[in-house]
Length: 132
Image (cartoon, rainbow, N blue to C red):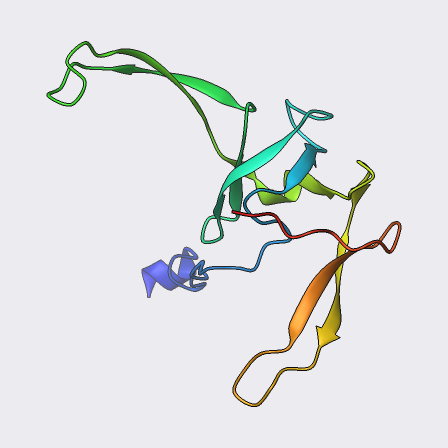
């Protein structure tokens, strides 16, 4: 009873499962918020469960690594840390940031899904699929 009066346990934390993100690996994006606002890069990794993306050359971090059998010298390792997916915006083929819409290209055959293509909300041009 005391726990409920204090507010503990009354609200359950929503489990964060995989979400569908507006960007894919290989997309060119521009950072719109945060320390790297205005910078552009290519997405190296997408983490839908955490709603984060890793952008090439941005949010660089350094980690001091102790010597191990795999890395006998140890030393300082530099790597790209993830940033929140809401802070990046997809670039259309013209190089302008845009939201994404999808359009049905071909109806699916029985047992297959319909094919969709991504469309730039700004210009209406299709966004080409990246080979990843």
